[in-house]
Length: 303
Image 1 (cartoon, rainbow, N blue to C red):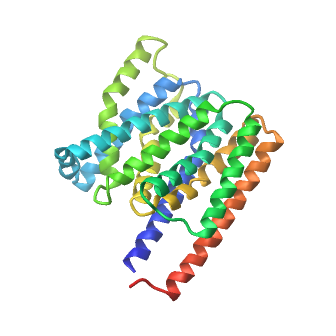
Image 2: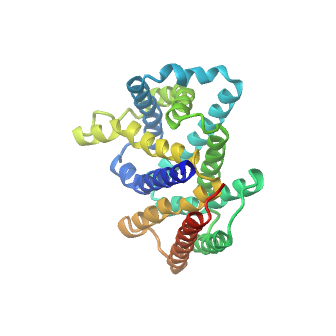
């Protein structure tokens, strides 16, 4: 029963994380004309503040920073910080420069990276219908890549950076809560964030507080907007196999693709629409497998 509850909580956390990430481009577009460097700087600095407040409310700061006594945890958290920095920087750049569809392509590819790590490195196994869903996903990625018509640097950088980020988070183990790891990651990155903000301030100038109250509120929300989905993701990655988590990640790029192609009017060749449909087929197959597996657990509960 405990295992079933853990799996259910993991699935709910994953849906929350990927659903919020799906609408993230809307937020970044609303931040224009702020530049990508400034937005990344505020994301990091305000995320640390957001995490610090949560730690104080939970009275967990001593436990979180006590993790630094472990050399392994210091190394894993620093590595996670590196991967999430790459992901944040590239994604903000893509959102602010009309590459939302290519960013979505990156997150279509990302589950393949995650599933590959789960199967090859962690020796996780896939059920037959999961292999079918994965095969459909491969076809979708090929169709979408052809539709893009050029080597998708942004897409591949996003895919691999977040795939390895998820792998590192998984390696931290179930004993490390999402707020713990995210606090340490933003702690490592904050000196860089301060440097970025100072550099922007001495150059073109910071936009915070200069473009009206609505823009100011949005920019000051960067910590919460950044941290809340990552906290959900951290909770999910500790409760689900990477293979399952990887296939669920299609929710975010579906939403991003729709926003970029339909709302923002980015290029939509026929191949992209075909790929989009194939992805939905993969999600349907995965859903059928999940329901069937649930029934199997009811009829044949584990010892």
